[in-house]
Image 1 (tube, rainbow, N blue to C red):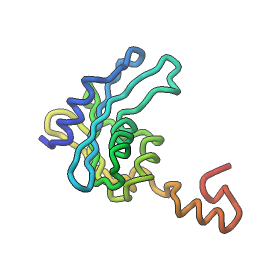
Image 2 (tube, one colour):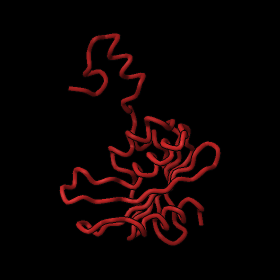
Image 3 (tube, rainbow, N blue to C red):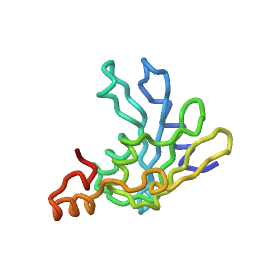
Length: 143
């Protein structure tokens, strides 16, 4: 089994999910091979909940990492969950379009995507620069 999938499965055991009961774990590998894990942490108002991918990314960035090559995501029901749009955008801040996103389908089954395939035309520093040059924030995905 993929070592990152295994780490994501281990991480989801620590999830705090009293409302949805939907456990998610993530394992993010840095360019130097260090692995950071995260789990989802729910809050009663939902909007303050943390997603597993965010928790792993925050821990990695907190420890000085800014380059990543692979992330694995697993849920307790092994349904092939992919990062949500918000997590995809957060990952895109630090990872290239070719970041491999491995999604746990259960057993040894893993479906792989690239971040660019999951989030085409992302808002990036480049799109913000383009918007500043044209004076039109709508070019960067804003309203």
